Image (cartoon, rainbow, N blue to C red):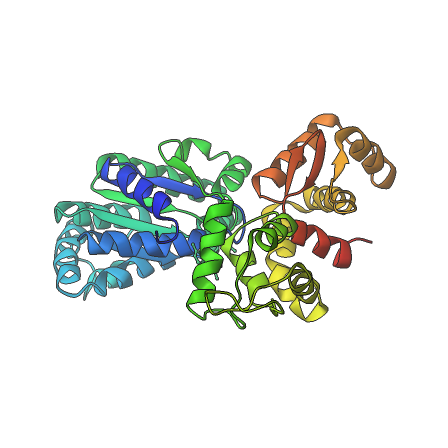
Length: 378
Ligand SMILES: Nc1ncnc2c1ncn2[C@@H]1O[C@H](COP(=O)(O)OP(=O)(O)OP(=O)(O)O)[C@@H](O)[C@H]1O
Ligand SMILES: [Mg+2]
């Protein structure tokens, strides 16, 4: 079964049912990858798909320009939409600009423009999905410039989702839109979106994924795994996202006997060797998303507290109890109210860094814990 088949089918079902979605999941789990596959699936079903990565964009105008460029790419369909759009914009502006619709950007209120655009797409009578990646970084930047404008824009998009149901939306990003929305009091603008959490692979999916990589010679030194080897790898990794599975797989130097699959068996020692290699300084870049994540996602005063929590929790694989955590934080930082510590732990759990098991807060990924201990522990 191809990867993420269940998620892809669920997304298609929800969209067919007229829903728009918000994909919330921790870093590196495969949100962008999944969005691309969903766009391909739907394009094959004759949907119009418009994908926009808004990381680095600074204004609504930039976003609109990008949407127009993506529509223009769709040749004859794009021309039809632009024809419609041009007519609508001419009515709004009494024709005060020359050339195509793109030339009207910046002269027309962005809300009026986006409404004309969505109305034109809707009027074509084909199912359309607009997939927006890194939406929270964009909204966060809009908020920093002009909070009222950001809120207006998001609420307006919600209204458009209601008025033009043929145009569906999928929003995602490396930081959660929910977190940014809470900061800007924008939750109401998102309530109509179905939340779609994405989990890491389960053991069966992870094993099938590794097998596929090796069978397709898509790792540096293809290997085979027996039950013992796989479970050792899964236990050490703890977080079976394809990104980390691949990082490890690429570093395994199999030293066991040849197997029926024609590949040598990876022994437990080979797997341990791969973890050690991955934790060498020249591989630090593979983990940098997690370090920057805290700074990107949280205000500085929270970031200090979050880092302090992670520093304590990385010390042991089994993590730390809430009570000890709070006591130690009060010694190193200041007295922190229970509620604040709980909020921070929830944020770290939502982001996939920590989870609570047997009354202790621990790293989800054994690999990431070892990384934290090696490089970020004071
Ligand atoms: N189902 C999958 N099968 C194979 N590879 C995958 C899968 N999902 C993700 N990957 C790979 O894992 C890496 C991380 O995926 P991706 O960039 O989609 O994650 P993300 O959740 O968008 O991360 P971020 O939060 O940093 O934006 C990429 O190299 C991608 O190709
Ligand atoms: Mg991404």
